[in-house]
Every structure is written in structure tokens, then in C-alpha cells.
Amino acid sequence: MSTFNPRISRSTLLRGTAGVVAGGALAGLAAGSAEAQPLALTVNKVKDLTGPGLTTEWEMEATDLGIPVSTPDGRTLYVFGDTFEHTIGDANWRSPVGLYSTTTNLAGGVTWSGAVGGATARQFWDYPHNNPEFSTVLPSDVIKIGNRIYLHAMVNKGLGNVIRCEIWYSDDSGNTWIDSGARIPGNWLGGMAQLVGWGLGNDDYVYIYSTGFQRDKPIILHRVRTANLTNYQAWEPWGYAGSAWNWGNPPTPILDGRFGEMSFRPLGGKWILTWFNEGDYRIEGLIADTPTSNLHTAKRATFLHGTSWGNEDDTHVAQLYGGYVIPGSTLDDLHLAVSQWNTTPGANNWPYRVMQFRVQGFGSS
Image (tube, rainbow, N blue to C red; front, side, top):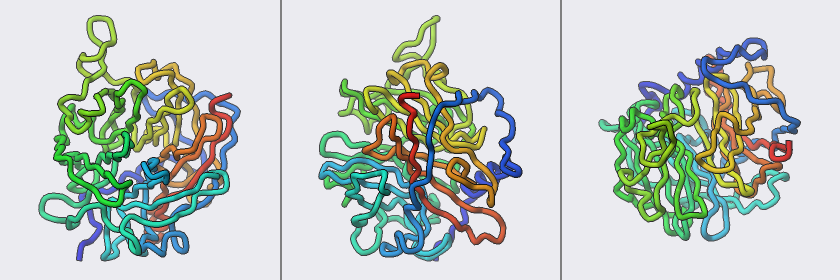
């Protein structure tokens, strides 16, 4: 039986962020971070998306991430990370897995219409967890290009120790997955290409924001023609050299900080980036005109603050992470898939779930 016992676990990372807050009061800003400007936002929790009674039907009460993508057949596919039938440590450990939704009224809450695999949420491709080579494979981001969905995935030998990244694709809206053969070394670019947020421009380029999976690195930028997405050596870096920013220069950080999970999407004629800010224990967002805009001067806001257990409300969430933009969102009516994992001793790793939050007014503030 496989056991959920990675050498470096996300629970370890979350224990660190849980200590940032005491009595609901945020600690000071991390070095090099920027305080998001206060905006007139309305933020509220819409609902829990996973957990007992919500995803029991597909044997996945305990799960996280839920990275959404519109499918070629008109549904939305949500891709989840480490997944268990009832609780962390169950025998049926799977990752990645997926659920489908046909919800169009996001304000009413996302509901599920089925799972990849049918009666039980099936792992996208077959591999044993905690094998001699690696422990688990986690989704990083998904993107639809034409009639194909691409998934960037991190192969972990203990969470946070990414030995390589892979790109898989599906030509049937996520029902089956094919290995593209892409193998991106975990130490490529100093480990800053492990965790990605990518979006498709109207110029046949995919723009890729990336960072490490250790929540201690900045963001860098690449672009690549859609036909070459799975060839990481064709990714063209954006960097500063010779007193100017240009494509083809060695990659230069475009935003400093300690970045975790992120979502980067074209939206409403702009580009939106949402992310877990490890350094300041919160989920933030910014709006840029283009992928190469100066992110330090972009409109930026904090959506959700981290807090301690027992001090939660609509804008304060204990041990939060993730924060993925749900298709159907607008800049003024933004919906996010947010994860939460309680690693407090005695809490039995619950909650370990995905929730839906709504942010109104970001685009017009």
C-alpha cells in the first residue's frame, strides 16, 4: 500500500505559512514584496467544491488544486492534485484526477456533472505512487489550444523536490491523456520553470509565467509558438540586457517575491495573474495590458488573507493556497478555485479541500 509520506510535503510548507498569522493579524511584509493597493472589492465564499457529500460519488472526498480549463466539447474540466477517497493516507491515492462541470451561472456555485474515468475519478495515466523514482505527479497548469488540452505536470520525489516536468495532452476533452514526450529537467533555469501559469495570446503564442515549486522564487517569462509548446528548448525567454527588455535575452525576473500556485489568463482584453503569495500569506491578483507589461506598476489587489483556524470569514482563510481563475469569470466578476489544508496536529488533515470564492469590482476599481 502506498502511503502519503513525501520527503518534503506541502503540509510542511503550509505549517510554515500558518505560523505567519497570530490571532488573525497579518505579519509584516516579506523583503522585496509590495503591498497590494486597497481597492473597493467585494469578496465572498460561494461554496465548498469538494469534500464529503460533494465529491464522495467519485471517491475523492480529500483533494486539492482544481485547476480549471474550458474543454473543446463545451464543458469545464477541473484538474486536481493528490486525491484520496476519504482522507490523506487512504490506499486509493491518485494524481492528477479531474471532474467536469457544465455550470454557467458561477454566482450560483459550480456543480459537478461527472469525472474523468466515470464512476471513480481515475488517475489520468497509470503509475504507482512512492515508486523508486518518484512519489507523485502534480498538475501545474492546463490550457486549451484548438481541440487539444495540454497539461503541464511536475514529477516530485517528495513534494517540492521536482525532478522533472512533463507535458501531456488530450484530444477528447480530458477523457484520455497522451504523453507528449516532453521532459523538462527540474533544475532547468535554476529551478524556475517548475510551476507555470500559461495563457494563449491572439498572436499564436503561448505566454508562460513560471517559478519554482518551493515558494521561494520570483517569476520569469517565456513565449512559444503553439506548435512548439511541448519543445521547451523552443521557449523564448524575456529578459533585460544592454539597458533594454527583449525576447531572446537571458530570462530576468519580472516580479519579485515568494510565489506559489498561480493562474495566468487573457481576460476582458487584458491579462490577469492570480497567485498564492507565500511571503505575505495571501492570495493576490493583478491586471496587465500585455504579458510583458511592467508588473510592478500593474493594478494589484489582495483577495484573500491567510489567518489562523477559528478566525475565518469571507476574506480570511486558514492555510490557503491555489487561487485559479474559473472560466466564465470577468475582471469585475472573478471566480477562483482556492485550496485549504489543515495540518494542525490532531486535525486529521481536514479540511483538505477546494472552495469557490467570488471577487467583484477588481476590473473597475
